[in-house]
Image (cartoon, helix red, strand yellow):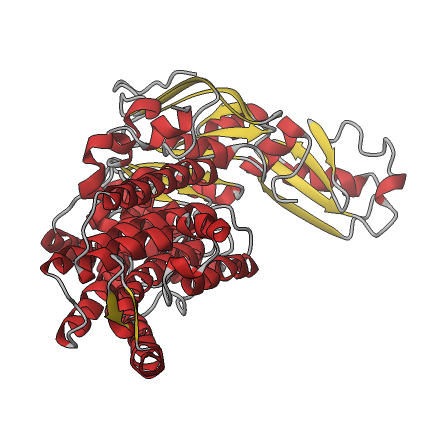
Length: 313
Length: 268
């Protein structure tokens, strides 16, 4: 799946595989990440996203295939590659024995920066992460959103060429998520390449220029959010919710109303270019759903189409 | 070298300066909690006062390394110096190391930087040595002032104590990498406490029957005590080289096992 981008890829994987004993976490995947783009791995938990990120981050050796990061081989030049990466792991790994600012300063030291430079960058990043007021606080009492922002600030201390973000907003409340997205969007505008994993389709749509959908260790689709929706779904969806027990008795009564119908446990999804028209047609057939919601297709619908399952279960 | 090792140890030659940042990190932490370190300095001092001078009055002179009679306090001071250095290094290499490895995920975050598992292992052991070394220096000054040092060779007692700290710290760290829960630390106490009491620390090894001497002589603390006692009392001999080689070998084996284990645990 080569990209259309003219510049050579920053990250390139061919047949990349990760096995843990007899279990295959990542099964021969191919992808390229171009400089400056925001690239996403979208998929449910256990799809192999984190294993892929750890291989890119040079903290987990590949079991097969080839991987180059910044034109280097992680197997032989791990430390050098890591010097150019900013890693935001799924679970916070902040140093709880240190203060907010010390976390940034010492992290810069790990990258070999001078103390003065670390201090300068730390103050700048505290500002960026909106944590200046908490600079001398211990890490432990910070809220989940603050810890994530600090983790992102820490990952920026070496001015990385690529940011690896593994589930950056999982577990955060909506307000904290939006604040984080805003910060990531600013990074993207500065030209930082973002590689992120998520199982939230709205996050993928908000942040990713391009993404791959992963399921069961494999890549099942690739493209921009819009391309994927155009290719695998209709423009709109009518969601019908019937009283308990009714949905199972509708056999055939909806036939021909939509391009495609998905049966979820609690509702029916009718895919069509004009959702309103579908809703009207349902009514005309004498069917009385409890609620009708017409909306645009999302990546969630793409995922459902490709795998027969929902993303967040 | 496994694939995982290669990932983390790309440029081994730069290992030592990078490992320094681990020490820097620990200095940040202890800047606020320095009292913990200070308490370790007093422990051997209490033993020296209570047992060396107190009990020593009842004991009188004991047989020194070359068969000469020496005051009891002169006899046990080097042993307490050795024990203090060992305890400082082991505390850092076991308990603190365990929490960094298993609960704080400190090392996971460090391995996302250019540092490697070897840097982590070297840095952490070096830090453990610094802590043990501080105790050794402090205690050395005290016993020098109290007149318990009988030879200029004693200037080598602090490096010798560091060597003992290296050996016991590295092995302690390697053992800690196998531990599953904090309750496993009882095992370390079961090993360290009897070693402290029975490694010819408080009485000469000749006190034991022949058969047991061999076992006692095999403990790292005995090796360290014998080495340091020889230096402070001024009985120098070629057998000291054996102690040095023993402790160096033990330290490097511990360091090697620790690196391998960290590799397996952190770079899956």
